[in-house]
Length: 122
Image 1 (cartoon, rainbow, N blue to C red):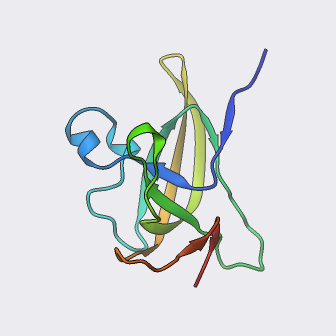
Image 2 (cartoon, one colour):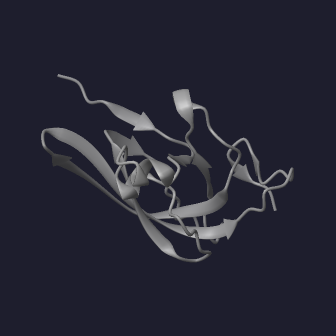
């Protein structure tokens, strides 16, 4: 018996067009309109683990939100998020991870560095 778990240091979702073309569920995609401080749900197949930190030294622990492109190529960070809730569940004999995340900041399409590896640069 084995347990398959994937550790993710970022949240990588598909472009909203994948939902419009019926290739992915809406929650598997970056929202059409991403708003600062708004909470969103997302889904990932399999059991995923992301960084949740409640250390009082930080107001929040931020993760980069990325767009997954073909062959698992990832974009530069689109936004900074905080994951605030997680649920693992089984649907049709498959394991899924459902999360709620809050957008902390949305990044401009520029050449600034917003994350150094997985640490937020301010």
